[in-house]
Image (cartoon, rainbow over all chains, first blue to last red; front, side, top):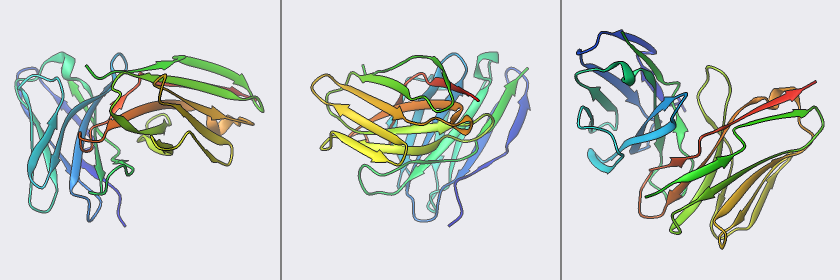
Length: 113
Length: 113
């Protein structure tokens, strides 16, 4: 099985711009979660999508949004970028069975200048 | 709110020694506790997990213990090797929160030859 794939791997954006990141989960996995990883804050949960619906949401401003498509691929969008949004954005997919492992993608490194 | 505290933030051991990393969680409804290893520039990868109905789990040189009463869980690595050097994250998931993982702040483990 192919693993979790995130595109692009690297992005450089200017303050005020918006960005869209993509995540393709492992085949058959319907849950996709997004995390922001920074040196100071560690791994913080952004949101989770399941069957095209947002199931959980973390404590991030409304500039951070996402969606999931019928093939379980998910996108995350950040509008009006700020310097503090520079981070590694990771997505993770898991099967629908309870208490199973979440598999992470390699992440998208976003730099806001 | 939900929180996972992880200690220590850095840990340096000699090759062959044991390493212990401890986590405390706040949500008593948490029932799944994974540990992830993240090498520099790579994705987090699951190394071991434990469910709330189990007190201890071992996999070769790695073990995890869970004390539900105290809301503590710990990672034990025996006979450490230089390739164990990485950042380790503990996490907790609550049964009714889907795929949402709350992560500890991470422990940077350095194993000196």
